[in-house]
Length: 482
Ligand SMILES: Cc1cc2nc3c(=O)[nH]c(=O)nc-3n(C[C@H](O)[C@H](O)[C@H](O)COP(=O)(O)O)c2cc1C
Ligand SMILES: [Mn+2]
Image (cartoon, rainbow, N blue to C red; front, side, top):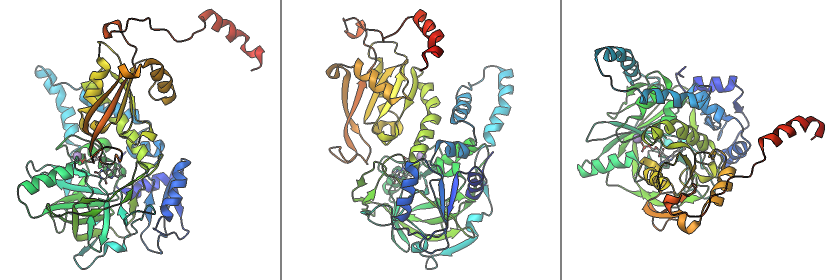
């Protein structure tokens, strides 16, 4: 079942006892963070703050902050159901022969049904305010952490267009509020928004139109964080995920479309040549990212629904809301990865690794050096290129159990032989790298070593008791009173 908008999702969360309304007055200056952080650390519910700074706009936070809520957003019992659906599509081969082609038609029609639809009017424009009529300072935007450089919109869907191909992109990039009508635009150099900006700059465009939506049905928002390939519109993928097209409506002052049921929309432009200091910001690594020059977003209109809800998040030391989004992204993209690299059995990005620091991968090893081939594949693929440490283990190791990986991997390695360093692009948030966005990465081949890999010693088996003894102990177990 697809949610119509954010409000429908809130209702479901409330019915499932996954959301708590807070009527006690709170400040947007760190108080919402302190409360939400404590709730996140004990796996608590989504929070709807109804009185932030004494204002009228309620603040929703931590809406996707658990596995259960992510699955509610996806409308499935288990995230593996989504992975399964995606696998079905990926396995769907091009047909040979007329009969196969005819059989394929309904499936193609089904896919066609998932494309976003443009509608004439949208609720997100129930109230329209043009330049001079609105102030961004009226929104309950959080100052998240003590040393933050200001207030940041942290959960936006930022829409841009590739001027070369005309394809739309939607990315989640935080926006620092500078004044009543200006914000930062923190699309990092590797992201699609930044790529579009470079295209615009190359073409000498004085302005690049940008639209930002805040608060929509949960999968539309979730899609903004998905690491999809270039020129694959996140709104198509979101429509596929929710099995219903997202309705998009034309903006009032720019030639862009936004989700029609969004709570709040900011329309405007980025001057491809302009930069301004952004940050510091308490980031999802759990550390502040320092000030850096970033593009500036000039807002030309603010539209919203009647009685809008402001959706936001905080990022910081895990676990936080974004951990569960990252978890869902990993589970959903695993089938895509496995299609290209069938030797990959499973992978896990433990929360403490803040996405880019640690990936645990199990493989079915088939030839000498196979683990290193898999590392190189991961470093060559989309945003997985940022992975600072990849640990590759054999298929009998459960990567969902970091304890098991530590036990087996560290027993299995001769560090000098099995650790490989490479240089390349790293996450912009990596504060230890020698340069912003450029540094080294480490791959650990923790698979069993083979003779053909030059390992001449015998490889031991794991400790075991005999099947017979296990049976005897099973029989005695009750009497043992243990
Ligand atoms: C809560 C949250 C905040 C994020 N903030 C930023 C950000 O400020 N800048 C950025 O480049 N990526 C940020 N990301 C990651 C991007 O949304 C993610 O890399 C996404 O794939 C970008 O879309 P794109 O591939 O279309 O560029 C954030 C993700 C989440 C979940
Ligand atoms: Mn994209």
